[in-house]
Length: 192
Length: 220
Image (tube, rainbow over all chains, first blue to last red):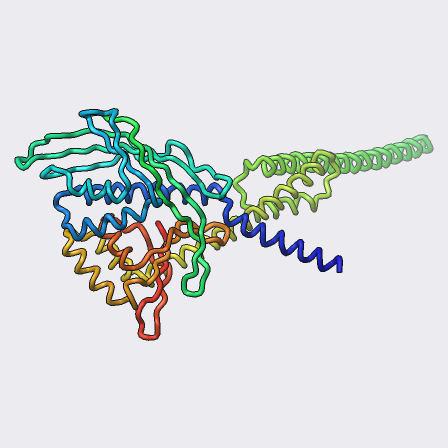
């Protein structure tokens, strides 16, 4: 009887260790997850550029907005600032932000993100979620019908990143994946 | 007078015999001594050479292969040199050669596994090369229309546009880490948006009609 308790204990410890080792990140795996989160931010950069471009067809922009929305946690907000009043930062829900971006009153819009890097590394939280902050610089240029540059600014923004290990069943297989979701995008600085 | 001559002749004979005997004995003694000295000198040289070779092997300053070092060590051991320094060096060199052999075997095994892995990657790449090229072509399309046409054509190979696409982001310790699973329709459009194909097809599953039902990619 005592022996069977011992076996149960060993089996439980074994299962716990297996689950623990899946969630725990070795430096190599951590690097891959770090890169994945950065890649998601680069994806967002590409989507913002497509949505903002006046050359993008409405149907394409609508599809890309859906893809971009999927990158964010529900209820996330994106900050918008202007050189006219840099301290007046307005925050919009992700969908609202993209729709607004699509309808900006310029003939041509160019949006470029650069210096995309971690401001604070992914850190494991008590609930197992890894949270970090990625900083980006966004260069915005708006042109009129004559092709004249009528507005431009550079904004430094911080994006909170949440990474959690999840599991899903695909084709009878249990797949463990890292779900990267973006949180609020906060404006830190606005300059010309 | 006659006995005196006779005696003198006898004495002379004795003297001659004594000289011959003494001379011969001295010559024999000197040859043995020379031989001993020669042998001792040779032994000393052998010991010194053994010390030099063993030290070089220990410090890794010889160009000899492991096999050559092993052979030389065995020759030195066969001399049965009674010298503390040589005996100590032999023990150390034996241990070093043994470690070097283990390291060489480990490296050989590592190389073999790497070759096998490279072969596998090469085989896999060749197996799905056409598919990879197709996905790459979508990402390199110069216009949205061209990309959409390629996407429509590509989707014909799949059972449904919702066929799951699994993307491996890392492989360590027998564990595959995946990105969030997506569908083939979303993935092909993603390639169009990103204008970049940084993956390689790892595996493809098909149904009875030959249509693809699952794709596994690995991030390069």
